[in-house]
Image 1 (cartoon, rainbow, N blue to C red):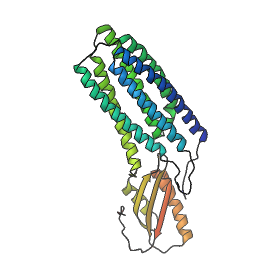
Image 2: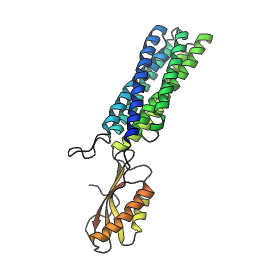
Image 3: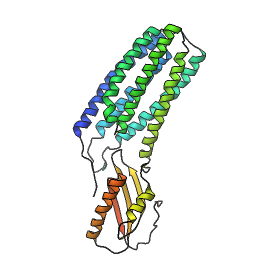
Length: 303
């Protein structure tokens, strides 16, 4: 028996359409900022453009993953493409980290070799970036709450909106106070924020891909809860993993005191699955019943 969630195809289609609009808008802003950064000499504007370009790539990856994740399971792909969006989140988070490190490197060089910057162009393009990224953020905000793939795209866009705000502030300071060094400082701050956000997402995606147990599931607490059932001696040889953000899987052996019938086991299994779902959020369960079987009874057994 398993508990599953219905698929909302309309919801998925809306997510895909919002991602597509975000790709188009960010492609336009990236092109504008690269041209503007080249003519103005602003590193923070070029860094914002590079980040925007990484947004376009990440959004494209997210869009493809979103489309693939809806494909049905088959004989040679029994889980379908349910992990496509986790892989996309991992790739996008990795790109955030790489871009951030590169920006810090460039900013340090520029800080010691400052250049005069055409601040008026920087201000107008930063304003354009705030409007475009702000709209894209609103498009993806709702779906990002319960989808790691969309959250990775949302983070790219949100940090880019913040970066555009920082570039705007820097443009104003450069225009009225000639503080051209602020361009490098802002670039480092943008990059540092990217590193923090990117690493958090990278770690979450990495945990899922490595089949680590969900962080909010305590195996000892779970074992105690199941062992309290009448007739159950213990639960052991436990494996828990996340297929994606919506599916937590468990497989385990349950040792019984008595040699019960299959129908009796089914009744107990229904109750066990209910506890696993209600208390621990596990919605896919595979249990192997045992009676006086000579095997290791540890919670975790190395296969």
